[in-house]
Image 1 (tube, rainbow, N blue to C red):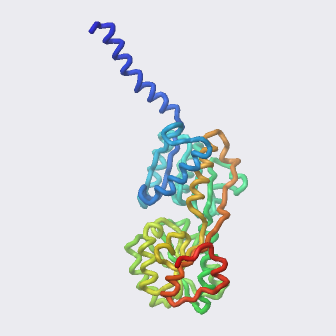
Image 2: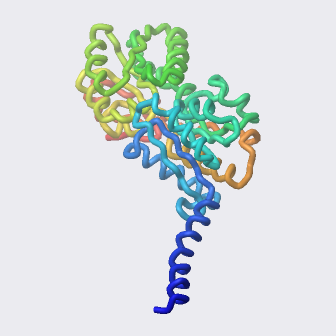
Image 3: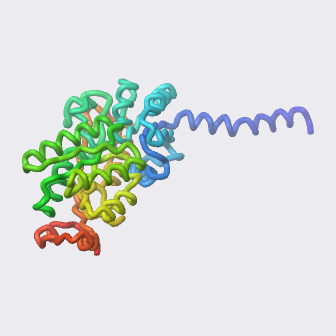
Amino acid sequence: MRRREFISLLGGLTAIPLTARAQQAQMPVVGYLSAGTPNEGEPNAAAFRRGLQEVGYVEGKNVAIEYSWAEHQIDRLPAMAADLVKRRVTVIAAVTTPAALVAQTATTTIPIVFEMGSDPVRLGLVTNLNRPGGNVTGVTSLIVEVAPKRLELLHELLPTAKVMALLVNPDDRALAQAQAREVLSAARNRGLELHVLNVSSERDFDAVFADLKRLHVGGIVIGGGSVFLRGINKLAALTVRHAVPAIYQWRAFPVAGGLMSYGSDILDSYRLAGVYTGRVLKGENPAELPVLQATKFELVINLKTAKALGISVPPSMQARADEMIE
């Protein structure tokens, strides 16, 4: 081979990766920050990507996504957020309340789109819902605000029960405190005694359920947070085994054998967060994008579990249910 041809060939070989790298460098990058795990969080991440696609962004084609999963170790989030800031991602998608709070602390310049269950105004993430006013906006599934409604529904089903319990994860401090405040207020208004019980991991489930009998608890409101979502099947089984009716926010609970659920569509919330992230990538200012709130709530009742627990679901509640599992 002649020397000139050899040099030309080398030039052809190096041109492709250089071009690919240049294209990659020009592609916007979304930093996806979550307190959860890839396995349990993938359905939500898929919904997020569907939202991105609705506004024209496809992962790997015209947008890159850098996933950072804290694996339920919330103390890892600050370093992960700092790393995303250091890499100068275009937008941070902070999903879960702890991730949103950490992201806000990490940067005041990179746009942040959250998906969370708490009130972002009360937590100081935005100045108001209609005009967030800073570099943060997003979607709230109203886990906290709807928690009193779950207590109301459970008491409607168990009118003779005077003692209730609320399960919260103290490691998710902001969410736990907000839920406890709202549900305690609702319990007082109904003349109910409420025990707030802490659950930091699935290892705590058995001990907490052992305490319920001693406390004479007639029903349980299961709070929000990844520890409960991760242990949803075990929770459902324990509520039946200990004969303690319970209500959770997600449909997966009655599907797994729990009594009932009442809450918003979490996948739709993640989809909307994806849509907002895409709009920010297109140049919209998060300060002017109103925080979106869940508007559709579903009541799901497992009639088979109700029968096993000796509970008669009144016709009026059956008529209001969006789904009854038999």
